[in-house]
Length: 331
Length: 252
Image 1: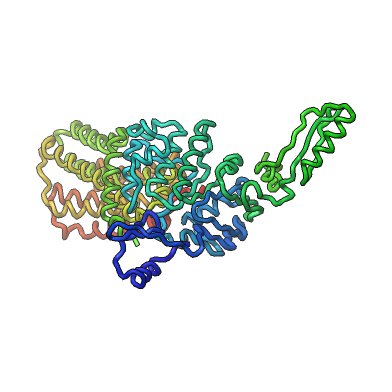
Image 2: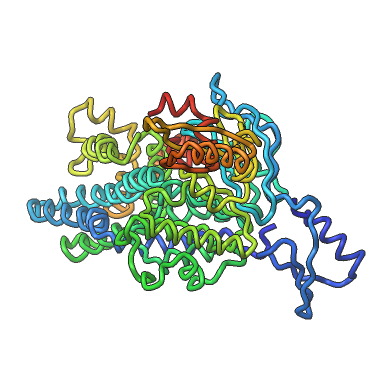
């Protein structure tokens, strides 16, 4: 949570007695009039707090009591099948939708009240690339930069998303992937502390995805908090510090990509083909011991174990496990 | 807490300039907005070139049509497009106040209306020799009422249009009957009685009456209070539904 302006003002009077110039690009940094910079710690270090969030449309409950926190500076992944409620949740956080119940705090503010301050500090990438077809990349970014109090430099933003050389191209002449990058650039131009990315790499070729990942990692290293919704589990695994899996309007699992789903979901699997060619599989918490036993038996019997493999379930396996009903009906 | 930000007026001005730039970059929109009324005026003027009475009907008629096309039709089209494309939603996520954004869009439409009127007035003066408008103040008042009423109605009508694909059909289903019934191309007094009755409740009829008074006959504004009253009622109706039904995304 960010400290409120009132607190800042009183801190100014009590502790310093000097007029401060607040650097709005970063809420935690004070810039003194002589140019010196002071930093303050926040109370909780949370960029987003969601408690018991519910959203109903008539009798239909799209979100049925979701709670999660996003820490400042982390990449938080929201996963879930279509219709699970993740877009509704994100749109409530972005201030596009009202909530039915529960409490939501984004950068210490209530997005439901659509505070101007919040929109100056948050960047949003929507699922659809809503661009002005007849504006060039540079023109679009300059225009959006003028809407923010402390925008990022236009050239710097173009470089950050990898659109160098396309400054003077009109949006409609850009490829799909380049349009998505312009989309991202428009979300970053205001120098936001928090960025919402809704399926930012859908439709990208593998190379473009890697480039987008690099951009997101670069943002993270600049201290930006990122909320990422994605269908690509490898994307969440590669980028997210923590993920929450949403299903039927509820969080069914939350944690780091490697620990999510609990211990049992992460037991090692040893698989091989026996003499008949049948696939054998064992799960264990002590793969070294089990592997030793299996290979020991095979050696003494003089058998070569074909396709011998030790693996840990990926985020994808855990995800499919947790959301299997949806997958069965959807596919 | 937007002390470091820009004022609503400054942002509206920036949006307005952007919309002007975009307008000129879209040649087909520029054509339909500006050249079509001019073309109609020249065609009808050429056909009835000797008929001063008819020229006196067609000049305020085309002027009124221009106001309606550049505000009502253009805004209904544009808002449907911007909503479907997600541009409205994107703008909603920025610090730009809605009033500044919509103000920029409306000012853009008003500019097109003023450009069209200027063209019509110049052609009437130098092409048909019917002289300058008789009452400039009256002209300004009616143009002000016209753009406000048809602007509000255009925004309100955009809520009814389900998709951009359907927009031409929806807009023309209103625009074409209204310009014919309201007497853009003929004197409503010479039309069949039932059409005259319908025409009397339509806003465009009253805008054209007012423009005719200001541009042709020079009847003072005091004789046009009935028309201003009808326009004001339509304006209130349009404004109510423009605000009430407004949505920033298409709900998908």
